[in-house]
Image (tube, rainbow, N blue to C red; front, top):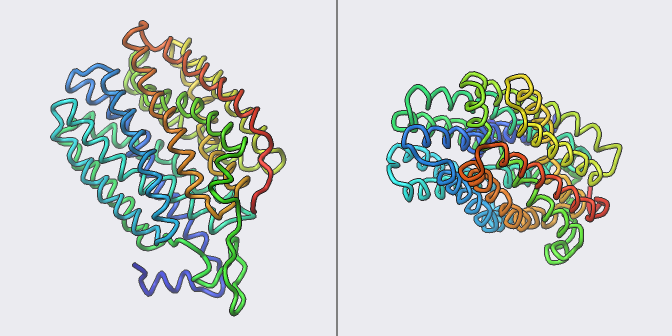
Length: 415
């Protein structure tokens, strides 16, 4: 899968090709988040509007999506630990493309579950797990800034891709718009992977961060073994914390478009997704500078607390300006929380079993990710609207603060 041109780029004796890894990673996560993570909120509104389905029933499909993504992550991690990550990413992109196209055929709720489950497989194989694994292999000392750059794609997807998807579905509906969603995903993921994604720096004559490999030098990968890592207090406490934090965050994001549309109008709802993503970028780059000066766990505690209070402010805000301010504060935390998930485990446990450790963590924490949308959807249908939903999300995030506090410092496993 390596062309002569890209072999030259990656074997260049003058410039470290890690920048191309970051370009590929940023692009992949832009489309993964825009069509996947942020897109789910748009699909929820479209299916609810066009098919007349309740929010809770569609939220259950979103829950199923994240559960399938978490479970499949274990097998994906084993694969990319031994084989070229590009094979998995391209295969996942093809599966996701097919599932997005098949949204046009959904008429029954069980069909939505089939489509979402298949989409989850492709999304998991070509998203955050494989991408951050590659970034942690190429960058050690500069890992925080590298992951900040790569994961900014998650926010860029919300700024550039999600509004485009919403416009397509508002204009064409699910039936006619799904083919465009499939095309956007395929074009945004497959070419960049084939050209510029590489699993390790050593085969191309580089060490992590940009030093040249000496003649005859063999790569040394260090870190904490999986069995030891998953028994540690740090792993257990941080994982439980992310169950609550991600549940609050994902539930809040997935229902946000509908909440703002109900309280204001469609234009404000679209603008809010841009605000959310823009402030996520600001938070991510600001956070990457701060974490070099303080312990990562303490920093994560502060971010989770801000997320909790911002969700509570969303719950009690009824007009345009307070809602957008609350969304901006919420966005600042979104930009950092996911970045901290990768950094905390890489910092504490190193590169050796990073993909398998993160996949094990992901399987557990995805229970919160999956439960968040259905909890908020159920509360919406049964507790008189979104006020109770977002108050519950804020409380869940604050529970996460408690568990982060029990984890202890993110001492260095391997830099």
